[in-house]
Length: 408
Image (cartoon, rainbow, N blue to C red; front, side, top):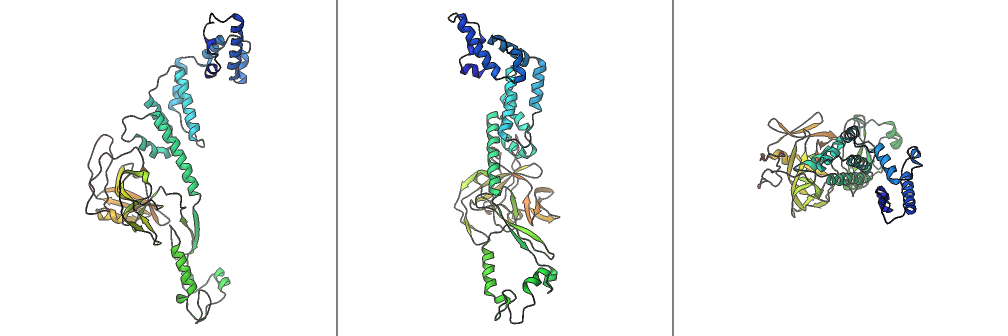
């Protein structure tokens, strides 16, 4: 239909105007019929090759393929309600397929409210979009299709950017020392490189005489270089092992939360995650390699926990130069939470309630949960504790009920 309007041939779908003679009208109809047939598949256009009236051709096609029957409406509604995301396609392709179904229903005069269109689109997404769905729906009385479509496209763009940044991650390999090495015995690879035990006046590291290993200048220089390097994971043990020390690139930020006993405050480098934010010159945070990162603000971040409950993390420092998101176990413990670690699982417990949970990977505990971003705001947060800047407030979010939660 758009092509007919574009070529000013839409008049052929109506009766012949009086100011056009028969010869000209026949020519316009032939032009319109050829245009319509050019958009049909080869298998579909042959039965209509001899048709010279564009109006009759259009009515035949409409009668065959756009009959406004209950059967056709049922077929298209089934397609709409059963519509699901197909793995491997882009979000643009998914939205195009969805909009095509909506257009077919509109051609059958089926009116679907905009909110139902948006909800059906959210229902078509896979499980790994549950976090985004929660963010889009929380605290809203209505949701629009255009907003959901834009959010899905932006989310896919962010995932692609994050994947590109993660591909730049470096891996450093280290090797531990076994009990056998500690006891003085050497493996084959050791014996090949060293050859024999050092003499009494010989350095066990550089094999030069005149000093021992503890006073070796080469070893001290190596330790200084090692202390200046950035490493996120470390592991030691009594058995032979090989493992990777991961160092994130300077461009990307991690989206996971680390439950850390070595940090004083909760810290996050991603400004967009804060549901409420106050600019603050909070001094600097001293990193493990003695680098100083400036604190530029403080605020609250909403987290969806392991049990699906959305809680609020308060007094979070905004440190843009960091690469990781840290939850201070010391701050949690100071608010009365009991921290337990057993079997690779960390739990922060208050009474019988498991407030948050983390799992161990590479000897670091990562939060079982995700960040609620954007439209999901806190209905009513717990009061901050003025005497303790690293206080931790938790608030269970409710759609209709406002409830004050206890400060921890």
